[in-house]
Each structure stands twice: as structure tokens, then as C-alpha cells.
Length: 441
Image (cartoon, rainbow, N blue to C red; front, side, top):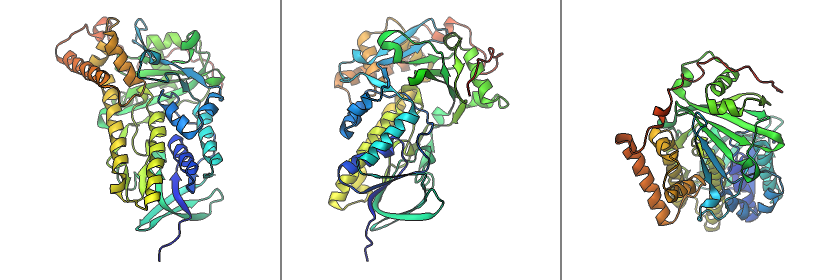
């Protein structure tokens, strides 16, 4: 006998992907249970949004509420050479295809809680401190076992499940779907700071990317409450070469040996603990199966240099809700019914992965930092950095031309090498650190 569903959809994970999927489904009248193992607010990295996130906010009916949060406005990104002498400003408003160029920098503890509460306000059953334990699928539905905040084991039956559990990989890991990206084996070490100077005017909220001679880079993200997120991304092999250093010492030494970062953070004070993330780029062999979908970081995650994480999470959460709403209407939940969703997630991952991998090539930086670069080509690349996935054919052609020039620069230098302008810096964390700043943690 077919068992009745307690819910139409169970969602595991209350981050941007899970909260977006939950609100979108609830707005469509679908009975939705969201299980989140933590209590919000909670810390999370990934604090810079891209302009196309606004489309998702509008689809969720929260765009006005987002504006009322008083977040730091972001209009673009500044990329700086290691010595601080050269910078390129990627101005989203200069790209005609980016219709809403202004986006936001977000303190994730606050932003994620906002999205979670919006899911509950739409009618989703949001349960924090409820840890999903297991999912068992059959022809008629899925049984999800979970532990409530009191430690009691419970279960819920639904037509389908969305894994939005992020790096935890509620479904992806047990199913053996996750694939680390060997070309992007990186480690990030980061913290929040106070007293970091900002640009004047409209550019005060823009992210700054400070590159390093070793092809690593710093992010500097202005947040509300006067905080600034500062982090450095290094190759895993460089990190492993200095196993005895504490995260605090690593971060301070990396700042000291990167002239642009040392100058910017000279009078800054650390305002919280130093955290690390390792091998954070990965893909998946599948994004969907019979009665399940992966959304956001549960499926794949890319190096954060171009701030794609939250945008991908928001868009995949919305798309998962749209696909499942149609599946519920038709009563069909097979993997073949989710092929469109699978293709879209895979296409998006490959699209941004190409740009991220190129960033770690010295030839990319040789061309990107040339002040005399063709304006139309630079605008096309900026359109890509703004998160646009399907531009006009002319913009797509300029993308391809730029990547072709990067390949040529590798073999036949078209412009002077940036690395030739200054002697190589020592390996990361190998210099004497600057005096430790005051700390409030």
C-alpha cells in the first residue's frame, strides 16, 4: 500500500540554497520541511554577492526586504598586483548586459538568518538544531530520519529530497558522488578585521583582490559594522611545506610578505578568530537522481576568487524548487525527469570553473593587468566576472578571443611578463611576521 507523504519535499540544510528552495516551494503551496543542524545565526564564509543574485531575490519576493537590511553596496571588484602599483577596476555598471550592476557585501551570519526566516515566513516548516541522519528511497517516496534538538530520533516521509547541506554532503558523500578538483587544490586562511581603510564614494564597498607573486591572492571585503573580511588563498603544496605554523601566524606572515596587503592592513586590528578551509573546490558526478536533487555547495563548489558561491547557491535553490514543483504536478520524480536541472548545474559549474582555472595562470594575469587592454574585451571579461552566464553572441566571442590570447601568451609572449617586473617573493609564510596587531577576540 502506498504510504502518505508527511511533506511534499524535505530539504536538508538551511543555507542560501536550502532557504531559497524552501521559500520558493512554500510560495507555490508545497508542504516543505527544512532541517538545519545548527542554530542561526552562525558564522559562514563567502561574503560577496554578484549582481545576478538580485533576480533570485525578486523571484522570492524579498528584494525590497534585502535593501532594507542596510548591507554594504558593491558595484565592482578591484584587482591589484602584488606590489600594489597596478590595479584593474572591474566596474559592473560599465557592462550593458548587466542590468542591475549594484549588489551587496554580506555578513553571512546575518544574511543567511534573514533568508532562513523568509522561508519560514512563506510557510515552510523550518527546524533548526535538527540533524538529518539518513534517507531511504523507494518507488513511492523517501523516508528521512533525523534527530531533533532534544536528541530524539524522528522521521518524515516526502515525495522528494533536496540536499542543500553544503560541504557536509548529506547525500553526495554517502553516494560517492563528490569529486575533488585536482587543478584547484587550495587552502584559505581568513579572519575579520577592524580599521581597514576603504575607498571613497561609491567604490567604498567594492571587493579588493590582492594578487601574490606565487599566484595566490587575498580577498578584502568591506562588511557592515565596520568589519572587513580578509583572507588569503594559497596552493595546498605551499601550505603543507610549513606544517608547524598556527593559522594566526600564517595569516600574519602572508600579509607581511605581500606588499599591497601589508600597506592596506598596516593599522588594522583583528576582530575575531582566524579560520581555515582546505581543498574547498570540488565537483560531482551527478546533481539529480530518483526523487533527489543536489543544490548549492552540496553539489559543487569553486574557488571563491570571483564570488560565485552564493549566486550559484541561490540560483540552484530556485531552480530545484521550480523543477520539483513541476514534478509534484506531474507525479514524476525519476532522474530522467530532472535531466534539464542536471544539465544546467553542470553547465554553470563548467562555465565558472574555466574562468577560475584561468585566473591561476600567470598568462591570464599578464593580459588582465595590462592598462592598454582593449576596452571592449575587458568589458566582456568584466561581464563574466559579474556572474553573467549567457551573454550576447558578441560578448561570448570576446570571451573566447581573450582565452585564446591567454593560451598564446603561454607560448609566445604577447605582452611583458608580470613576473619579470619584480623578483619572486619567498614561499608563503617564510618571512618574519610583522608585529601582531591588537586583537579583540
